[in-house]
Amino acid sequence: MAEQLTAINNFRPKIKHGLTVPLDELVTFIAMRTGVNEGPVTLMLRELRDALIFFHKVGRAVKIEGLGVYSPSISLDGKYRVSHRVDRALTNELNKEGGFRGELINRDNINKSIEDLVTMWNEANPDDPVVV
Image (tube, rainbow, N blue to C red; front, side, top):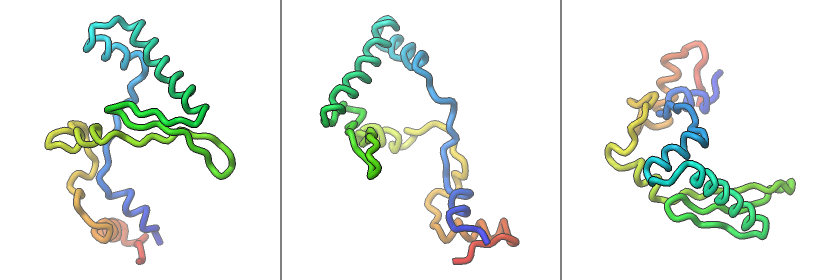
């Protein structure tokens, strides 16, 4: 008997992720768009990282307009983490008509309900149905 989550994960719409952009490629992109040499761009990105660490170590969140808010947090076991609340501008751009241009898996399943996805799973896997 399959789990409902298995059915959802199998049939839900997903983004087909490309390779993660490494720092050197990001630096080259920013340098080309700004006319600033790659060395200073790399330095600025590292300084931004160091600034986040500095302010987080004293318990302060950092808001970067257009990117979001980075905040220090702590788990129950005492491990520190950095939480990121994404700026709405990022998601708004992705959600504009034609904003996302990448590849989607299960595109046809956008707006289907959980029940629809479970039904699809049960039809595709009659020997391993999800029982609700």
